[in-house]
Length: 325
Ligand code: 8YV
Image (tube, rainbow, N blue to C red; front, side):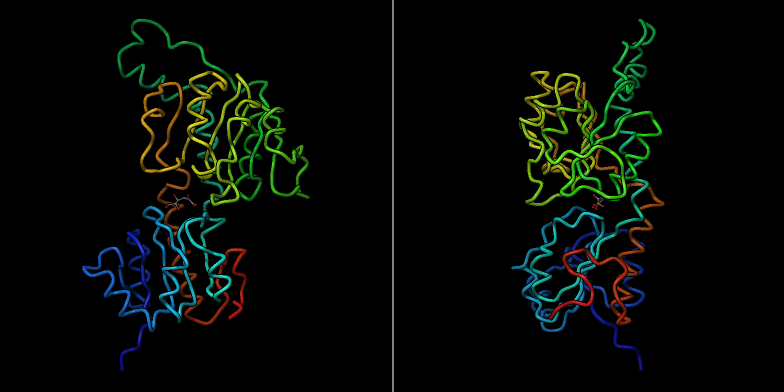
């Protein structure tokens, strides 16, 4: 007799590795492709125990949606950030949430340093200058420099620490702000973001999204960062007050910015688009083939661990294993 495969509801488009990996071991249902979404939900609701988020954009996974599935046990989410999942609701309802940390740490840290260099030394602008044939008319203007700068990291988790290591190798002095002081580092700690910003001229934002960090980087922080200041955001767009940032860039309250994430991505505000003196990446942090495959595999492996009744590989802190039902 054929094995009765457990159902998995995939909430959005996902890379083939995830789709095929789930299909091999489970009965896969693709919510975004359903002709009648409500019918699919109603059919699955009495029996569905597992969902997966593929990472093709991060539509909110809210308690009001999840509560339609009384037997739900597991949500395997793509990406280290899971601000789109109502993890509190999951914790209260015995649902385990997993994310894909660690496997992307070095990639995101590489991207952060790349974005920093691009922003300070204006590499994308200089390349556009060459391609426009302007080099024939004279050299690209001299740029700002990393030399003699102090960097402040907002959010010193795993990725923040990997960025700090790279910054040290580049000769930068590193300080940080975090919810709590980290015991395993000797960088200067600032209990407030404004105090950190006052003491550095690079502010590297690596925070998760969500209510706790919403608009953490506001007008006051940008003012404190000052006219030499460079803001880099590799964490979540919601952590930066974009209107305040646009104003700070226009008023030259800060010098420049490099952004990999945006408040309403993939839509980027026209005001940011129109500025040629900043650097904008289309959320590239972890986006290499190597790293995205490792992340995708972890989405599948977390589901397989759940299927085997084993502890999930990477549960988020809000939903430690075993779940409280
Ligand atoms: C992914 C990310 O781009 O891991 C994260 O939190 O932001 C990125 O690595 C994103 O999850 C893709 O949807």
